[in-house]
Amino acid sequence: MRRALGTLGCCLALLLPLLPATRGVPHRLRRQPLGSGPGRHGAADTACKNRPLDLVFIIDSSRSVRPEEFEKVKIFLSEMIDTLDVGERTTRVAVMNYASTVKVEFPLRTYFDKASMKAAVSRIQPLSAGTMTGLAIQAAVDEVFTEEMGTRPANFNIPKVVIVVTDGRPQDQVENVAANARSAGIEIYAVGVGRADMQSLRIMASEPLDEHVFYVETYGVIEKLTAKFRETFCAANTCALGTHDCEQLCVSNGGSYLCDCYEGYTLNPDKRTCSAVDVCAPGRHECDQICVSNNGSYVCECFEGYTLNPDKKTCSAMDMCAPGRHDCAQVCRRNGGSYSCDCFEGFTLNPDKKTCSAVDMCAPGRHDCEQVCVRDDLFYTCDCYQGYVLNPDKKTCSRATTSSLVTNEEACKCEAIAALQDSVTSRLEALSTKLDEVSQKLQAYQDRQQVV
Image (cartoon, rainbow, N blue to C red):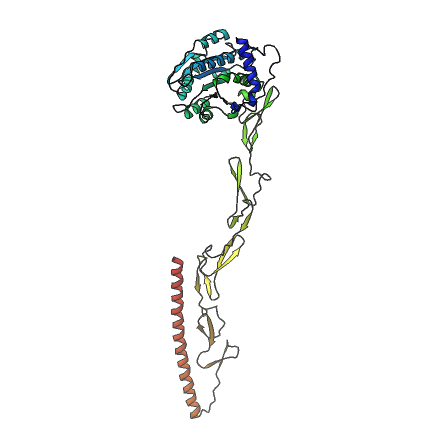
Protein backbone atom coordinates (compact mmCIF):
# COMPACT_ATOMS: atom_id res chain seq x y z
CA MET A 1 0.00 0.00 0.00
CA ARG A 2 2.75 2.47 0.94
CA ARG A 3 4.69 1.58 -2.24
CA ALA A 4 1.60 2.23 -4.37
CA LEU A 5 1.02 5.61 -2.74
CA GLY A 6 4.63 6.55 -3.36
CA THR A 7 4.30 5.64 -7.03
CA LEU A 8 1.12 7.75 -7.27
CA GLY A 9 2.96 10.70 -5.71
CA CYS A 10 5.73 10.40 -8.28
CA CYS A 11 3.26 10.31 -11.17
CA LEU A 12 1.45 13.37 -9.90
CA ALA A 13 4.76 15.21 -9.55
CA LEU A 14 5.52 14.44 -13.22
CA LEU A 15 2.15 15.92 -14.23
CA LEU A 16 2.63 19.01 -12.04
CA PRO A 17 3.60 21.43 -14.85
CA LEU A 18 0.45 20.43 -16.78
CA LEU A 19 -2.07 21.00 -14.00
CA PRO A 20 -3.86 24.34 -13.48
CA ALA A 21 -3.37 23.94 -9.73
CA THR A 22 0.33 24.72 -9.84
CA ARG A 23 0.08 28.41 -9.14
CA GLY A 24 2.22 29.37 -6.16
CA VAL A 25 4.80 26.61 -6.87
CA PRO A 26 8.31 28.10 -6.63
CA HIS A 27 9.78 28.61 -10.09
CA ARG A 28 13.35 28.83 -8.76
CA LEU A 29 13.48 25.33 -7.27
CA ARG A 30 15.08 22.59 -9.38
CA ARG A 31 13.20 19.25 -9.44
CA GLN A 32 15.43 16.19 -9.05
CA PRO A 33 14.96 13.52 -11.76
CA LEU A 34 12.13 11.20 -10.73
CA GLY A 35 12.32 7.46 -11.18
CA SER A 36 16.10 7.30 -10.95
CA GLY A 37 18.27 6.08 -8.10
CA PRO A 38 17.43 3.77 -5.21
CA GLY A 39 14.17 4.20 -3.34
CA ARG A 40 12.65 6.74 -5.76
CA HIS A 41 9.43 4.70 -6.13
CA GLY A 42 8.66 4.35 -2.44
CA ALA A 43 7.48 6.77 0.21
CA ALA A 44 10.39 5.78 2.40
CA ASP A 45 13.01 7.46 0.18
CA THR A 46 16.51 7.77 1.48
CA ALA A 47 16.37 10.76 3.85
CA CYS A 48 18.11 13.86 2.61
CA LYS A 49 21.00 15.20 4.65
CA ASN A 50 19.47 18.61 5.04
CA ARG A 51 20.78 21.09 7.57
CA PRO A 52 19.03 20.53 10.95
CA LEU A 53 15.66 22.28 11.35
CA ASP A 54 13.17 22.87 14.13
CA LEU A 55 10.10 22.16 11.95
CA VAL A 56 6.48 22.64 13.05
CA PHE A 57 3.47 21.52 10.98
CA ILE A 58 0.25 23.46 11.64
CA ILE A 59 -2.70 21.63 10.04
CA ASP A 60 -6.26 22.88 9.59
CA SER A 61 -8.95 20.43 10.78
CA SER A 62 -11.95 22.77 10.67
CA ARG A 63 -15.41 21.51 9.64
CA SER A 64 -14.70 22.35 5.97
CA VAL A 65 -12.11 19.55 5.89
CA ARG A 66 -13.97 16.27 5.35
CA PRO A 67 -12.73 13.15 7.21
CA GLU A 68 -11.32 11.53 4.06
CA GLU A 69 -9.53 14.79 3.22
CA PHE A 70 -8.01 14.97 6.68
CA GLU A 71 -6.65 11.46 6.16
CA LYS A 72 -4.91 12.77 3.02
CA VAL A 73 -3.28 15.47 5.15
CA LYS A 74 -1.99 12.84 7.57
CA ILE A 75 -0.51 10.86 4.67
CA PHE A 76 1.18 14.06 3.46
CA LEU A 77 2.67 14.59 6.93
CA SER A 78 3.94 10.99 7.09
CA GLU A 79 5.58 11.26 3.68
CA MET A 80 7.14 14.58 4.63
CA ILE A 81 8.60 12.93 7.74
CA ASP A 82 10.01 10.17 5.54
CA THR A 83 11.95 12.74 3.45
CA LEU A 84 13.56 14.43 6.46
CA ASP A 85 16.79 13.63 8.26
CA VAL A 86 14.98 13.25 11.58
CA GLY A 87 16.85 13.01 14.88
CA GLU A 88 17.64 14.75 18.15
CA ARG A 89 20.73 16.36 16.65
CA THR A 90 19.31 16.81 13.14
CA THR A 91 15.73 17.81 12.28
CA ARG A 92 13.15 17.91 15.06
CA VAL A 93 9.43 17.84 14.16
CA ALA A 94 6.31 19.04 15.97
CA VAL A 95 2.66 18.85 14.82
CA MET A 96 -0.12 21.27 15.78
CA ASN A 97 -3.82 20.75 15.01
CA TYR A 98 -6.19 23.72 14.89
CA ALA A 99 -9.72 24.84 14.19
CA SER A 100 -11.45 27.23 16.64
CA THR A 101 -9.01 25.92 19.23
CA VAL A 102 -5.40 24.80 19.00
CA LYS A 103 -3.97 21.45 20.06
CA VAL A 104 -0.26 20.61 20.18
CA GLU A 105 -0.30 16.96 19.05
CA PHE A 106 3.38 16.58 19.93
CA PRO A 107 6.15 19.18 20.48
CA LEU A 108 9.72 19.17 19.18
CA ARG A 109 11.10 17.33 22.18
CA THR A 110 8.83 14.27 22.04
CA TYR A 111 9.95 12.05 19.15
CA PHE A 112 13.34 11.68 17.48
CA ASP A 113 12.59 8.75 15.15
CA LYS A 114 10.31 8.53 12.12
CA ALA A 115 8.31 5.52 13.22
CA SER A 116 7.17 7.14 16.47
CA MET A 117 6.32 10.40 14.71
CA LYS A 118 4.27 8.66 11.99
CA ALA A 119 2.42 6.58 14.59
CA ALA A 120 1.53 9.78 16.46
CA VAL A 121 0.35 11.40 13.21
CA SER A 122 -1.92 8.44 12.46
CA ARG A 123 -3.73 8.98 15.78
CA ILE A 124 -4.57 12.67 15.16
CA GLN A 125 -8.32 13.43 15.08
CA PRO A 126 -9.94 16.51 13.49
CA LEU A 127 -11.29 19.22 15.78
CA SER A 128 -14.14 20.17 13.37
CA ALA A 129 -14.84 23.81 14.18
CA GLY A 130 -13.75 27.26 12.90
CA THR A 131 -10.50 28.39 11.25
CA MET A 132 -8.39 30.40 13.74
CA THR A 133 -5.11 30.43 11.81
CA GLY A 134 -3.72 33.46 13.63
CA LEU A 135 -4.37 31.79 16.98
CA ALA A 136 -2.49 28.69 15.80
CA ILE A 137 0.58 30.66 14.65
CA GLN A 138 0.64 32.58 17.93
CA ALA A 139 0.44 29.29 19.86
CA ALA A 140 3.42 27.99 17.87
CA VAL A 141 5.44 31.04 18.90
CA ASP A 142 4.38 30.94 22.55
CA GLU A 143 4.10 27.21 23.27
CA VAL A 144 6.20 25.26 20.75
CA PHE A 145 9.19 27.38 19.79
CA THR A 146 10.55 27.39 23.34
CA GLU A 147 13.54 25.58 24.75
CA GLU A 148 11.25 23.82 27.26
CA MET A 149 9.33 22.29 24.34
CA GLY A 150 12.45 21.24 22.46
CA THR A 151 13.51 24.25 20.40
CA ARG A 152 17.27 24.51 20.37
CA PRO A 153 18.97 27.64 21.77
CA ALA A 154 19.48 30.63 19.46
CA ASN A 155 23.28 30.25 19.52
CA PHE A 156 22.85 26.85 17.78
CA ASN A 157 21.63 28.76 14.65
CA ILE A 158 19.01 26.09 13.90
CA PRO A 159 16.37 27.50 11.48
CA LYS A 160 12.83 27.65 12.86
CA VAL A 161 10.33 26.65 10.16
CA VAL A 162 6.51 26.49 10.10
CA ILE A 163 4.39 24.81 7.41
CA VAL A 164 0.71 25.86 7.61
CA VAL A 165 -1.81 23.69 5.71
CA THR A 166 -5.32 25.18 5.32
CA ASP A 167 -8.32 25.07 2.98
CA GLY A 168 -10.16 28.18 4.14
CA ARG A 169 -10.02 31.85 5.02
CA PRO A 170 -8.75 32.69 8.53
CA GLN A 171 -11.50 33.82 10.90
CA ASP A 172 -9.08 35.91 12.97
CA GLN A 173 -6.31 38.42 12.39
CA VAL A 174 -3.33 36.73 10.77
CA GLU A 175 -1.25 39.57 9.34
CA ASN A 176 0.22 41.01 12.56
CA VAL A 177 0.66 37.60 14.20
CA ALA A 178 2.52 36.25 11.15
CA ALA A 179 4.63 39.41 10.89
CA ASN A 180 5.66 39.10 14.55
CA ALA A 181 6.52 35.44 14.05
CA ARG A 182 8.70 36.26 11.04
CA SER A 183 10.36 39.06 13.01
CA ALA A 184 11.17 36.47 15.70
CA GLY A 185 13.13 34.50 13.08
CA ILE A 186 10.46 31.96 12.10
CA GLU A 187 10.25 31.10 8.40
CA ILE A 188 6.64 30.44 7.34
CA TYR A 189 5.47 28.30 4.41
CA ALA A 190 1.75 28.54 3.54
CA VAL A 191 0.03 25.61 1.78
CA GLY A 192 -3.46 26.33 0.43
CA VAL A 193 -5.95 23.67 -0.66
CA GLY A 194 -9.16 24.12 -2.66
CA ARG A 195 -11.05 27.12 -1.25
CA ALA A 196 -8.03 28.57 0.54
CA ASP A 197 -7.77 32.37 0.35
CA MET A 198 -4.62 33.17 -1.64
CA GLN A 199 -4.33 36.67 -0.20
CA SER A 200 -4.28 35.26 3.33
CA LEU A 201 -1.61 32.74 2.32
CA ARG A 202 0.57 35.55 0.96
CA ILE A 203 0.04 37.66 4.09
CA MET A 204 1.26 34.93 6.44
CA ALA A 205 4.13 33.53 4.31
CA SER A 206 7.77 34.62 4.36
CA GLU A 207 9.52 36.35 1.49
CA PRO A 208 10.14 35.60 -1.31
CA LEU A 209 6.49 34.59 -1.73
CA ASP A 210 7.08 32.47 -4.82
CA GLU A 211 9.20 30.16 -2.66
CA HIS A 212 6.91 30.10 0.39
CA VAL A 213 3.33 29.95 -0.98
CA PHE A 214 2.00 26.65 -2.38
CA TYR A 215 -1.44 25.75 -3.72
CA VAL A 216 -3.21 22.56 -4.80
CA GLU A 217 -6.80 22.18 -6.01
CA THR A 218 -7.72 19.28 -3.72
CA TYR A 219 -6.41 17.25 -0.81
CA GLY A 220 -6.24 14.35 -3.25
CA VAL A 221 -3.09 15.76 -4.83
CA ILE A 222 -1.46 17.36 -1.79
CA GLU A 223 1.14 14.60 -1.73
CA LYS A 224 2.79 16.09 -4.82
CA LEU A 225 4.09 18.92 -2.60
CA THR A 226 6.29 16.41 -0.77
CA ALA A 227 8.81 16.53 -3.62
CA LYS A 228 8.78 20.31 -3.58
CA PHE A 229 9.56 20.51 0.11
CA ARG A 230 12.21 17.83 -0.29
CA GLU A 231 13.95 20.02 -2.89
CA THR A 232 13.63 23.06 -0.64
CA PHE A 233 15.02 21.42 2.48
CA CYS A 234 17.53 19.06 0.86
CA ALA A 235 19.05 21.17 -1.91
CA ALA A 236 22.57 22.34 -1.24
CA ASN A 237 21.24 25.88 -1.50
CA THR A 238 22.01 27.69 1.71
CA CYS A 239 20.30 30.81 0.33
CA ALA A 240 16.99 28.98 -0.12
CA LEU A 241 17.23 27.45 3.35
CA GLY A 242 17.67 30.86 4.92
CA THR A 243 20.73 29.73 6.86
CA HIS A 244 23.12 32.33 5.47
CA ASP A 245 24.32 35.47 7.25
CA CYS A 246 24.03 37.92 4.35
CA GLU A 247 22.49 41.23 5.36
CA GLN A 248 20.75 41.86 2.02
CA LEU A 249 21.22 39.39 -0.85
CA CYS A 250 22.44 35.79 -0.89
CA VAL A 251 23.80 34.35 -4.15
CA SER A 252 24.23 30.57 -4.43
CA ASN A 253 27.72 29.49 -5.47
CA GLY A 254 27.84 25.74 -5.96
CA GLY A 255 27.60 24.20 -2.51
CA SER A 256 28.32 27.55 -0.87
CA TYR A 257 27.09 31.12 -1.24
CA LEU A 258 28.21 34.72 -1.65
CA CYS A 259 26.66 37.88 -0.24
CA ASP A 260 25.62 40.81 -2.38
CA CYS A 261 23.81 44.12 -1.87
CA TYR A 262 20.83 45.97 -3.30
CA GLU A 263 21.35 48.72 -5.86
CA GLY A 264 22.73 51.81 -4.16
CA TYR A 265 24.66 49.77 -1.56
CA THR A 266 28.13 48.26 -1.53
CA LEU A 267 29.45 45.16 0.21
CA ASN A 268 31.55 45.87 3.28
CA PRO A 269 34.98 44.26 3.86
CA ASP A 270 33.32 41.63 6.10
CA LYS A 271 31.64 40.30 2.90
CA ARG A 272 28.32 40.05 4.74
CA THR A 273 26.94 43.49 5.53
CA CYS A 274 26.20 46.42 3.21
CA SER A 275 26.62 50.19 3.36
CA ALA A 276 24.83 52.83 1.36
CA VAL A 277 26.89 54.12 -1.55
CA ASP A 278 27.59 57.86 -1.61
CA VAL A 279 25.60 58.36 -4.78
CA CYS A 280 26.48 62.06 -4.73
CA ALA A 281 30.23 61.44 -4.92
CA PRO A 282 31.89 63.04 -7.99
CA GLY A 283 31.27 61.00 -11.10
CA ARG A 284 28.35 59.02 -9.61
CA HIS A 285 25.52 61.44 -10.38
CA GLU A 286 24.26 63.55 -13.30
CA CYS A 287 23.27 66.70 -11.43
CA ASP A 288 24.31 70.02 -13.00
CA GLN A 289 24.73 71.85 -9.67
CA ILE A 290 23.63 70.16 -6.41
CA CYS A 291 23.20 66.41 -5.67
CA VAL A 292 21.12 65.41 -2.62
CA SER A 293 21.27 61.79 -1.37
CA ASN A 294 17.85 60.18 -1.00
CA ASN A 295 17.77 56.67 0.57
CA GLY A 296 20.26 54.97 -1.72
CA SER A 297 19.33 57.20 -4.67
CA TYR A 298 19.58 60.95 -5.27
CA VAL A 299 17.72 64.03 -6.49
CA CYS A 300 19.13 67.13 -8.15
CA GLU A 301 18.72 70.72 -6.94
CA CYS A 302 20.00 74.15 -8.03
CA PHE A 303 21.84 77.08 -6.46
CA GLU A 304 19.86 80.14 -5.36
CA GLY A 305 18.79 82.13 -8.40
CA TYR A 306 18.53 79.03 -10.60
CA THR A 307 15.62 76.70 -11.35
CA LEU A 308 15.64 72.95 -12.12
CA ASN A 309 14.88 72.13 -15.76
CA PRO A 310 12.26 69.50 -16.76
CA ASP A 311 15.04 66.91 -17.18
CA LYS A 312 15.46 67.07 -13.35
CA LYS A 313 19.23 67.30 -13.79
CA THR A 314 20.29 70.64 -15.31
CA CYS A 315 19.63 74.20 -14.06
CA SER A 316 18.79 77.53 -15.71
CA ALA A 317 19.29 81.03 -14.30
CA MET A 318 16.03 82.65 -13.28
CA ASP A 319 15.15 86.19 -14.53
CA MET A 320 15.48 87.75 -11.11
CA CYS A 321 14.26 91.09 -12.47
CA ALA A 322 11.00 89.70 -13.85
CA PRO A 323 7.91 91.39 -12.35
CA GLY A 324 7.15 90.01 -8.92
CA ARG A 325 10.61 88.46 -8.38
CA HIS A 326 12.44 91.52 -7.00
CA ASP A 327 11.75 94.26 -4.45
CA CYS A 328 13.43 97.24 -6.15
CA ALA A 329 11.44 100.50 -6.06
CA GLN A 330 12.63 101.75 -9.47
CA VAL A 331 15.31 99.85 -11.40
CA CYS A 332 16.32 96.15 -11.11
CA ARG A 333 19.67 95.07 -12.59
CA ARG A 334 20.43 91.35 -13.13
CA ASN A 335 23.69 90.12 -11.66
CA GLY A 336 24.23 86.46 -12.64
CA GLY A 337 21.73 84.49 -10.63
CA SER A 338 21.02 87.46 -8.36
CA TYR A 339 20.15 91.18 -8.77
CA SER A 340 20.78 94.68 -7.40
CA CYS A 341 18.60 97.79 -7.24
CA ASP A 342 19.22 101.18 -8.89
CA CYS A 343 17.35 104.49 -9.37
CA PHE A 344 16.23 106.74 -12.22
CA GLU A 345 18.29 109.84 -13.03
CA GLY A 346 17.67 112.50 -10.43
CA PHE A 347 17.16 109.94 -7.66
CA THR A 348 19.56 108.26 -5.26
CA LEU A 349 19.46 104.78 -3.68
CA ASN A 350 18.51 104.79 -0.02
CA PRO A 351 20.53 102.87 2.63
CA ASP A 352 18.05 99.94 2.39
CA LYS A 353 19.45 99.33 -1.14
CA LYS A 354 15.90 99.04 -2.48
CA THR A 355 14.09 102.39 -2.41
CA CYS A 356 15.05 105.76 -3.97
CA SER A 357 14.85 109.43 -2.98
CA ALA A 358 14.82 112.53 -5.23
CA VAL A 359 18.23 114.22 -5.48
CA ASP A 360 18.60 117.98 -4.51
CA MET A 361 20.29 119.05 -7.71
CA CYS A 362 21.23 122.41 -6.17
CA ALA A 363 22.87 120.90 -3.10
CA PRO A 364 26.53 121.95 -2.64
CA GLY A 365 28.80 119.96 -4.87
CA ARG A 366 26.01 118.71 -7.17
CA HIS A 367 25.90 121.69 -9.62
CA ASP A 368 28.44 123.80 -11.48
CA CYS A 369 26.82 127.24 -11.11
CA GLU A 370 29.26 129.96 -10.04
CA GLN A 371 26.74 131.99 -8.06
CA VAL A 372 23.06 130.96 -8.00
CA CYS A 373 21.55 127.46 -8.69
CA VAL A 374 17.86 127.41 -9.55
CA ARG A 375 16.09 124.02 -9.37
CA ASP A 376 13.80 123.18 -12.27
CA ASP A 377 11.97 119.90 -11.55
CA LEU A 378 14.74 117.27 -11.75
CA PHE A 379 17.19 119.70 -13.42
CA TYR A 380 18.63 123.15 -12.67
CA THR A 381 19.70 126.47 -14.25
CA CYS A 382 22.35 128.95 -13.20
CA ASP A 383 21.82 132.64 -12.36
CA CYS A 384 23.83 135.57 -10.92
CA TYR A 385 23.66 137.97 -8.02
CA GLN A 386 22.38 141.52 -8.53
CA GLY A 387 24.95 143.56 -10.36
CA TYR A 388 26.26 140.53 -12.25
CA VAL A 389 25.28 139.00 -15.55
CA LEU A 390 25.40 135.39 -16.70
CA ASN A 391 28.11 134.65 -19.14
CA PRO A 392 27.44 132.79 -22.42
CA ASP A 393 28.62 129.49 -20.80
CA LYS A 394 25.42 129.65 -18.68
CA LYS A 395 27.44 128.90 -15.57
CA THR A 396 29.75 131.78 -14.64
CA CYS A 397 28.93 135.46 -13.92
CA SER A 398 30.56 138.83 -14.70
CA ARG A 399 30.05 142.20 -13.01
CA ALA A 400 27.69 144.44 -14.99
CA THR A 401 29.34 147.61 -16.55
CA THR A 402 27.75 151.10 -15.89
CA SER A 403 28.44 154.55 -17.42
CA SER A 404 29.15 157.61 -15.29
CA LEU A 405 26.75 159.63 -17.35
CA VAL A 406 23.34 158.19 -16.87
CA THR A 407 20.41 159.85 -18.50
CA ASN A 408 16.99 159.92 -17.00
CA GLU A 409 15.85 157.43 -19.55
CA GLU A 410 18.70 155.08 -18.68
CA ALA A 411 18.00 155.58 -14.99
CA CYS A 412 14.42 154.64 -15.58
CA LYS A 413 15.60 151.63 -17.51
CA CYS A 414 17.85 150.70 -14.63
CA GLU A 415 15.01 150.97 -12.18
CA ALA A 416 12.83 148.88 -14.46
CA ILE A 417 15.57 146.26 -14.74
CA ALA A 418 16.06 146.25 -10.98
CA ALA A 419 12.32 145.82 -10.48
CA LEU A 420 12.33 143.01 -13.03
CA GLN A 421 15.25 141.36 -11.28
CA ASP A 422 13.40 141.58 -7.98
CA SER A 423 10.33 140.05 -9.60
CA VAL A 424 12.39 137.27 -11.15
CA THR A 425 14.11 136.58 -7.86
CA SER A 426 10.75 136.40 -6.06
CA ARG A 427 9.38 134.08 -8.69
CA LEU A 428 12.48 131.91 -8.52
CA GLU A 429 12.20 131.69 -4.76
CA ALA A 430 8.50 130.78 -5.08
CA LEU A 431 9.37 128.17 -7.69
CA SER A 432 12.09 126.76 -5.39
CA THR A 433 9.59 126.52 -2.55
CA LYS A 434 7.14 124.73 -4.83
CA LEU A 435 9.83 122.29 -5.94
CA ASP A 436 10.65 121.54 -2.30
CA GLU A 437 6.99 120.70 -1.69
CA VAL A 438 6.86 118.44 -4.72
CA SER A 439 10.02 116.64 -3.56
CA GLN A 440 8.57 116.12 -0.09
CA LYS A 441 5.34 114.72 -1.52
CA LEU A 442 7.27 112.38 -3.79
CA GLN A 443 9.34 111.19 -0.83
CA ALA A 444 6.18 110.56 1.21
CA TYR A 445 4.67 108.58 -1.67
CA GLN A 446 7.76 106.44 -1.96
CA ASP A 447 7.77 105.82 1.79
CA ARG A 448 4.18 104.63 1.60
CA GLN A 449 4.98 102.34 -1.33
CA GLN A 450 7.84 100.83 0.64
CA VAL A 451 5.56 100.13 3.59
CA VAL A 452 3.00 98.44 1.31
